[in-house]
Structures are given as C-alpha cells and as structure tokens.
Length: 526
Image 1 (cartoon, rainbow, N blue to C red):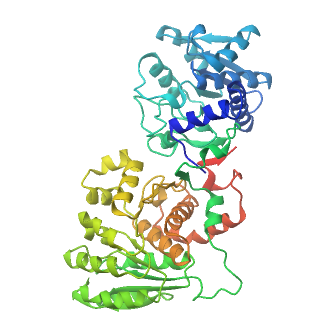
Image 2 (cartoon, rainbow, N blue to C red):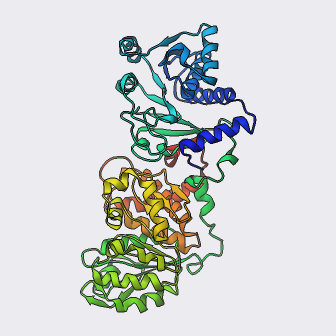
Image 3 (cartoon, rainbow, N blue to C red):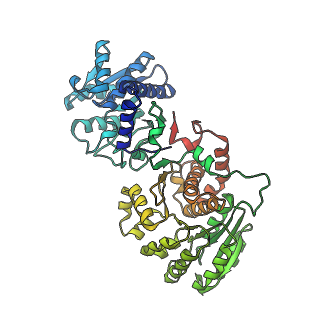
C-alpha cells in the first residue's frame, strides 16, 4: 500500500478528474459517503453528530457527510467555519445545495460566535473534524486555533477527515496546534503525516477509504505501508519436505562479559523466525555460559584479544563459518572498542553472505560507517535514534524530527538498508524505496527488544527473502508480537518473543480488512 505526500495526492486527484473524467463533485460525494459509513459502524442511529466544516475541499467532504448522516436519521449539527460566500468549486456546490434545501447551517467566523458551539459540544456524541485537511503548510493561529482547542476539550470521540486538522501532511508536524482524533478516515491512500510522529500519535485508528482514485496513479510512488497481505506475500511457504538444512542457516557474532543475554535473545529470535540452523559465534570466555542458556543453538568459540573482546584474527573463523550459512548478524552485546572496529572492517569487506549490523557493531563503527560501501551485499543496519545520531553527528531530536529524510539520505550515502527503529519503524534502501511499519507499541520499549528484531531480520534473509523486504516483514512481525501483549507494565522482551508463533498464525489466517485483529488496529481499509 502506497503512502502519499500532499503534492502526490493533489496530483492524483487532478488526474482522476482531468484524465480519467471523474467529476470532482463525485469524488467529494464519495468521500462523504465513506465518512458516513464509518459513522454507521461506530455510532448508534440516535446519536448526535457535530460536524465542523472548513471552507476548502475537506470542509466540502464534511458538508456531504452532514447531509447523508441527517438523511440516515442522525441528529446532525453542522457548523461552518467560513462565511457563506467563501466556499469554492465542489465545496460551493454542496454548500449551495444545502442552503436551497434549507439544511440548518450555522456559520462561525470569530471568537464571539463560539459560545453556542461550546454548548453544542457538551452534548454531542461524535465530533467530525473537517476543518483543514492536507493543505496546512503554516502554523494554525487565531480563530481556527480556538476551534481546534474546543474540539480537543470536548469529551466526545473525534473523527478526523483525511488528516487531523493542524497536522502537516508531509512531515507529521503539529502546525501550532492540531486536533487529537480517535479515528481518521483518509482517502485513497495514507498520507505521510499519518505515519510520521507526532501526527501519527494524534490520528488514532486510521481507516483508508476508497473514493475511486485509480490505484495505477500511485504505482511509481516509492514510499510504502507494510500490510498483512504484503507480509504474507513476502514470507516463503514451508514445503512439506522442509528440513533444518533447507530453510536457512544463520551465523550471529555477538556477546561479551555481562552481555550474554543480547546474544541469546538474537539467536533465539532467529530460530523462532524460522531459520533451520543458528550458529552463535562469541568470545571464547563466555561460551560456557551461552551453552548453559541455550539448547538449540550451536556455539562457535572465537579467539580473544583480551577477556571478552574478539581478536581480529577471528575473522578467518567467522568467514569460514559464514560460508556454510545464508546470513550473518553482527553486534548484539558486542564490545564497542577499537579492536572490534578493526574486526568489523574486515568482516564487512569479506563476508560471503548478507549482513545485519546492530548495537555493538554500530557503536564500534561510529562515524566510520562509510565502510559499509565496501560490502559485497547491501548490509542491513538497525539503529535506534541515539545510534543514528552518533553515526551522523546530529542530535537524536533532529533524527526524530526528520526520520524519513534521514533514513533515505543515509541509505543512499552509506549504500545500505537502514531500519530506523522507533514508532512506525522506517526501512529505507539506497534507490529510495521506503517501507513504514504500522505495528508495535510501548511494549517494545524494553531491553532486548532490538536484539529480537536483529535475529528476526537475519532469519528472514537466511530464508531467501531480499534484504529490504526481509527488514520490512520483520518490523511488522516484531511489532505485531508486541501488539499481542496486554497494554501496560509487567512484561519483558522475552514476552514479545513468546508471541512470535501467534503472530505468524495471525498472518497466515487473517485478511487485511478484518477489524478484530490487533495488528490492524492502527491502519486498516474501509
């Protein structure tokens, strides 16, 4: 599923109207129908619905919804945040129709008009935000900001039309102030501002509604939303005659004194992710501890420079073992000093299989990350914002405020696949293709969660999945396993790992449109 910028969506609308011959007023009517259908699904017929409509196309969608909901028996209160003569184009068509049929339209354009709206909001069951839409490109101030404040103060649920008013559709930034919605019904395709924070955190559940904008218009877009159907397509089938040697072998280089847990979590995740064989290469001095913790993983002792620090001479052992495997993960729990940096330089150049680098490997590389360009296969790196900040020399806050641009720019610069972890993990590859992951929640913000993701990505690559698609599928499955945990405190990363099997079952058995599945609670089609 494609994710669109503001300009891409406007261009798709234009082509739909001018080249495909679909009148704009029909698109607006269809949008209003989709809004109404969602209200039918969420609210009882005797509910009171308050619609706030701006003067643009977003407001026009709200006008249509108000008319349709009133016809369906809802008590509709329509507030137009515009003077009667300010509507244009398709919105004006609908405004003029409502006036001619004597539909009750209440106009508010100044602070002194707010008293009656405030009283109305006290007794409404649902607020429909159709004020601004995707066109916001400067801070919302004045009377419109007051309207948004009143919506947010209302205790009733809020349905936003296309995007919560005040959210920048390209960056997810709050433009001064923004509506906090319980649901957002967005048309044709998700917008970038719905998957980039803070906008993503204000959109609530996102419902994608088809309004007959042809999907062919989006085919060349490079930004994608990972969906259950895409993950089903990516994951290979397990043939009936599969055996441990035919479904992928993983080599993991990980661990140091006090950090054996990271190595264990990565290895167990790779196994639960479907790899048939997992080898864990670690400093010789910690191998007995690793063998005591794991039964199904094969331990490979590596020579040490000093206790717990792998010697650069171990390169030959690692490369020889890698030739027997399909993918190599390096980094979880690894020492981060200069010796490790020298080891990594050699492994990056010599690895005969695709690599995934995380944690200690990223810290050891630091600003020498450019050496990834010498790898035989596109490496996958899985930094969190702090690690990305160290590698780029900018602050974690700057990373978070421009996650998409940072991932795209550095994937191209370093010639690697970047999984920038965090809410709605971004996967970017050098040619500009990007995947946004919609699954996951606060349950993943615990020690060891990143190690699990590293193991899962490496497992998928070992099973023959191209590295960028493996990263996208792993982010989705890992997040889904987190979504299956009851919200709140009291869990660890191992609880996420325990849900991997259930997550795979969900993917195999369910459809994208099935509302009840927890992995679709954030993004689903209508």
